[in-house]
Image 1 (tube, helix red, strand yellow):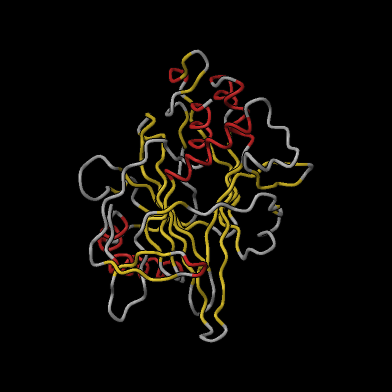
Image 2 (image 1 turned 45 degrees about the vertical axis):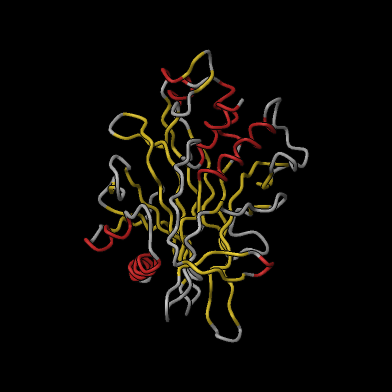
Length: 310
């Protein structure tokens, strides 16, 4: 069942089981306290906002959260993404029924919460979180293996869901964050030049500190060489608010052995689409960094903020 769990994540997010090891961070980082007693490492930066460069899993949405059809759920300010895996009629014939049924059962969901500081009158990006939703009695509801709320997941559903959650924890990582931007990398299997290829899908979520306006960007990176990543496309995507995506998939029949899929049996056909923004030289330099310094994170945020508020 572990193979099917890998496929589920590939279908929904593009995550791949073999996450790359995170490099050691610079010794100039200092430790600050955060609410709840959590200790985080931030790069020392005189007269600049704190930048968190510690790799960490994206928080999970609380099971039982209902995703409305017309906006974010209670206690959340924004729906970022609601992705429903979709296969063509031809691809459905190529994929064993059990694998395709489980893959299409769960919808990857991303939420964000923006908060306003009453003293400074400025907004911050408080949290971004993710979860799997399933239709339960007509309502799209966040579930996990321990909280399925009576949903019919079949014989293997709970185990597949549990394994898939663990894979996302390992392979979909926050790589940098400030009070107003989270940068998230997902290891992805993409349909590229007719092949299923391992790539990086990078996400940036930003809030305007003055207005509270939220913007989300996605771009695709190739990791074919040492050093920084290479842009796989000529533009990044500024995706629309509250995006509900039909996530189109590619299936390779030769990647199944006795009905069990390999990790690259399925691939995403494209990244989420919105307004294409062509790379400038400076945006490309920053957007393709494999490892960031604090200043590079702030510079990238500045570049994206200019685009997102046009």
